[in-house]
Length: 428
Ligand code: EPZ
Image (cartoon, rainbow, N blue to C red):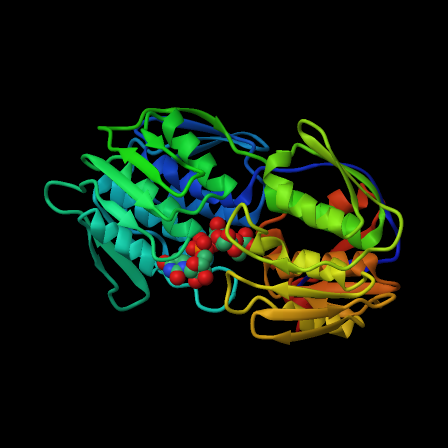
């Protein structure tokens, strides 16, 4: 088992550089399946979800060459196998992008239903609605697969109105539509930075996608996509996680390689909490000297406050003066981590989508678990801010989405290390 060991109670100071965006990378890499040529993708984060999705492409017959630590060349010109390996694909949510990409390129796909963080139900009805609108036949055969097949004469453009704002379905239908015949109009689209990043990648390879980042995306199908190169945007949520850590621990940190516009909602909330945020072209300086003050947060689709920052900010608010109200507007259940914070002395009352956070003077270190990716990041923040020692278990959930998190915090003065006990030794 792998654990993080944290001796908390120290302010953070120094500089860190943010990696490429996880939720862009796990959509852009499958998008290479649509391209008849070599895609050079840069600024890829070194995280296990990305390793997994690259492994799946190789299993399908793609030629994947590592150019350097954050750059790969992917050539899907000669893909023949379209049976996605079950054990690999079911472990991550983003495997559903393989459906849109394989359907768009080859007119057929059979993909295990996705896994991912347990946030309450994670339906895919809007993905299915979009595929069927483009003319595909969608079946959910036994054995946990989704199978999609285009009609004989291929997919055709459609006018699709999403019932809910969904990142996954917006990206997935974009993937399926770029090679379909005619125009596709998608309405009530998600507008996250990674949606725009995927559209920019596809357009760099010859697609015709307009309106990404707004409610309405218009796609004109093209014959084929050609090779090219593209660099992934910095990770908005990784940057926000470090900003929330400074809020919780105090100190002064320069967060480099960010797009400040993507952080506007997080910056606004931190300023309400008496955290100082100074914006530069591609960096933000985050400082907290005095007491944290309370605020209220409601998570919403972008440009609202991101749900993937909810656990991290709630953790910081545990140490604020006063009572904060958190409303989770996206996921049915994203408060399981509060049980772990309570173990450390937090005072949080959860009722459905609402969490009431009474600020306490301090948190105390304890053994805690990383239930999912962002909950795990919240445990690290809590451990860094708490007095005493915190051990975080199940950190593989954290390493799905954060590159070298321990090294980055140690560079900011954190007293923290990672231990790995082989499974066999554990069972003794
Ligand atoms: C993506 O998940 C992210 N994951 C999530 O980040 C993030 O929390 C979420 O978007 C919202 O921003 C990846 O990009 C890999 P949705 P996704 O489809 O696409 C409902 C992280 O920590 N819905 O935008 O699965 C759904 O139930 C992860 O990096 C339907 O009803 O989210 C939810 O309430 C956790 N039907 C809402 O929409 C559908 O067909 C938003 O879901 C699809 C979604």
